Amino acid sequence: MPSSRPPYPPEFRRQAVELLRSSGQSIPRIADELGVSPQSLRNWVKQTQLDSGARRDGLTSDERDELRGPVGWRRSPPVAA
Image (spheres, rainbow, N blue to C red):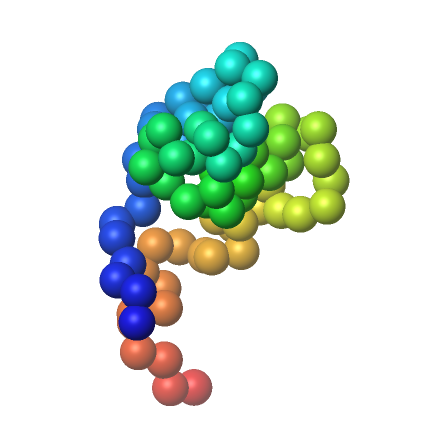
C-alpha cells in the first residue's frame, strides 16, 4: 500500500503552477524536477484554473470549503432530536 504524506503547502502548489506556466516544459518534466507526481501537478493546475474562472467544470476552492462545512463538524457526535 502506498504511504501517504501531508499535503503540499498552498504556496508550494502556487509556485509549481507558475513554474509550469512560465517554463513551457511538460507537466511530467516539471513534476519530476519538483519531486511530485504528474497527477498532483495536473490537479493543482486544474484547481487554479477553476479558481480563476478559466474553467467551469468543477468546484472552486471556496465552493469546496463551503460544502465541507465548519471545521470539525464531522468529528462532533450527532445531536439527538
